[in-house]
Length: 316
Image (tube, rainbow, N blue to C red):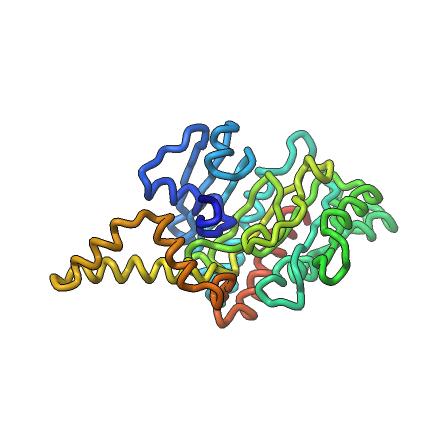
């Protein structure tokens, strides 16, 4: 059955699928808050039990989703508000008991492929401080407390011949940061969430999982330090778009008497059977295709500044 599930990296969308099927997930706690004046919705989902993790197909931990319908706009003030909210969320997920941290920011992805270039571009825009602190100390910034921030763009295996995890573990062994922030592009279930949603989680990340290109995961268990993962969906599975269109078509058929019999037959299929049918019809031409918005280059550039500003606010 898992091979017919619509691909998504967003925990929020996985939960929404259970809600559509009227299935309650035990061991998963959800809280929602809406910043009406900023038009920002924040959903906090905590997977508390192993059973909840198994049902969701995701590790135990906290998953925070920031949704902003106007995130694709060019309003700099609005993006500043998003950056401030992002910084607040990041601080919530940091280990407790200390005021300053040594932070490694890893920009995952391939900067040569625009929808996958978010991570590298965020690191490009970061305020890096580790080398200044090592050379001149914290007083170079005129502050009593300064976070040590370093960054790395490990590339992808096709470029380096190495897993991102292997490169990052080597860097962590040498630089010994307290926490790692991993930035990556994600895959979404819904086209309305492309470039409009940010997911922040303390469970780490599996690079490439949303597009079926599973690589070794980055988490506290694999790299030895807490990992906060931040991602924005930039692609959606082609089969998902066709599936949504099919559902809209069925609803339109139900409104016409001479087509209602056909719609009844299609409605008799469950979601898994519909998705299987669609993938068979798409195969082989579109079966592995992912779709991205036509203005993705501008969106990734804008989002990279929004995320890097949030990180700079959190650690500057």
